View (cartoon, rainbow, N blue to C red):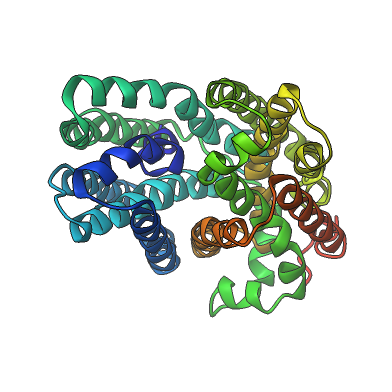
Length: 391
């Protein structure tokens, strides 16, 4: 539920308000894109600092803080009448929606489960594909019935009135019935291997992390760039906007199914082992439009990207708990979420630069596939399949 509410800050939902922002505030596409990237970059940097607090603050207080922040973001956009208030509203929306809401949910699942961590993560992250399927229709309905500004007022009221009471009830219920499970042996082994002055230092000093990082950041970096610049790709590939919109349904479905299946695979094989192979669907997704044409390529692209995004979340998030333990998991997860957010602020600008300098769609897809192939190669030399921590 918390992951689902965070969709209000995800690019796929905000994009439905993009033209309204530009028209109402008199912004060019460049001005709006710069404002969006600036807000996203700032939220990613702040997430690195604030996100680690989940290791020290009670879950109830952290949920309350996130709820107030996301409601404030929606209220700011409701009253937005210039570029300054738009940037502030987008910053708050990206920080709490894209950042803290899923960070809170995923970190909690990583901490509370060990033997069934993969299944827990996959179940929680289904909130994203569920939002991708449901929320665009809701956004279109709200804008058509109430206008874009009043839509944000409705969202601002729905978050504390609908989400918060149920979230607090579920937290209390889980404490009463002690649903969480731990593997004391694994937890004690990983905790002993951690340094006392924090896991981020341990993580950043580990050469294996830097070998795995290109693979970890590949999916959010590439998918965001493709979605933001879909207006460039669609005509070059001979597709229609309606065709591409229909493909998103398959993207959402495969995102959901692959997330559930990958969670079960994590519990069977471990995130360490699966990290090396999970980029394969993304390589296939990018190679197809670089070499072939046709409407079926559009469906294949979105289906394979959905598999890559869906499987990546449980695999990568489980990896950090397997390797570095759960004591400082909130800080590690905050750092990684921050880096992912920062990567999503870079790709629209980088892709735009390459497009302005004459790169074709097929060429861009080709070079992106080569990047993922190189990242996959480096991942094979990162984390071993051993159960003990190796620092």
